[in-house]
Image 1 (spheres, rainbow over the protein chains, first blue to last red):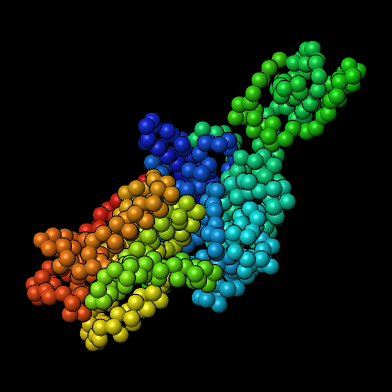
Image 2 (cartoon, each protein chain N blue to C red):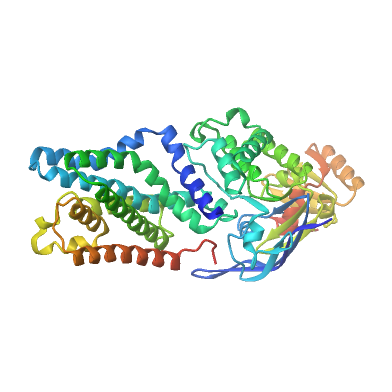
Length: 304
Length: 246
């Protein structure tokens, strides 16, 4: 598969009152036609990475390539291939979704008629065509966000870069955006998405990387990421249970305890014991969030 | 060619939605500039009204010029439309000139109105109209450059602070110096009007209207000051402004 984006030892240091190393030599590669998610806690370096790749910010060291063009030395070429939706993007109240989609398509160099077609297609793909002439001041948060995403789509860029595009949206609006993103991948677009929401990463990603404090600590498909930890199941036990740590690693969340076990039999054994003690317990395969917390460093860990 | 096309697209996208959905704005722009005329009509002599009309033309273009540089740019940063444009194949000059041109479209109806009234009041010939337009364009460029320099050097200031600065600066540069009144009223201090772009432009227009006697050398000096200050502001802005953060 062809590489759409490749970062080469990307370093970014912010010099303010104190030196902050936002990226510490990040090497990532994103294939053409995949949805790649950069997952990390707040302040992990996700936005910095995206801003460098999208030619908005210069790296302190290293370089990145978009379709073989260097963001350092060939930003003009890079810009022909990308479209960006920044984090916490807002809208002008007197603009309509059509204005955003149409004018952004025009700025790509499209003639008027082509831009109209691109805007129409983009608005339909995010299910906003019916509202195309409503001013943004009268749209909901999700509709505004989809309007901005449509402006990026209308550009018909090969790579879309979206920085936490669903933050602040309700579940229904979020799913609308996810659906639009997956349709774009099906249509051959490459998408780089940043998020701190595990569910989002699990739901839409082809591949993902977990970034923490400027370092990539895991990269791969969802199943590959999950294989990075030995435990395969988790059992959530509510109530007091002595010697729970005999079964596996325990994470306490208030009065609930999550026990991570390696095999299905261990999970069943723990379930049976909990039920005998008249405690509420439920077992399930580990989630991306479990893996993420383990890799990034969780809370109240109690190893056996 | 794309640079010019993009400039016009940005100017259009930053003015047309306002024109279409908030047409009252055109009246507001005209009224702000016309308010001093109301007081002049009541309290000043009839002969002062033509000075007031010239002031209204300069005011229309200047107030909105400085606002475009400060407010539009800071709001573009706030809503992050600028970040999106930076990541597009758009030249920074297209963006800056487009942002500055947009209010010119919005102020055009007021300008035409004041211009027609002034011409009817005080008959002017074609060369005078041409020189007046040229002077107004320079005043617009100078005031936009002042707006850009402020939004560039106060990069981290809040949008609200920048809006207040824009309003104060607009009012200060329009209503205090001799824009609505002739600089001869300042006596020995009349030279001050040359160093402020708004009053300098108003003085030049008065000269072309035959309302202010100036020597040919004085006119050249005034033009030079207007051009040099505009260029200096543009250079200072371009030195500091960063299209791409470093």
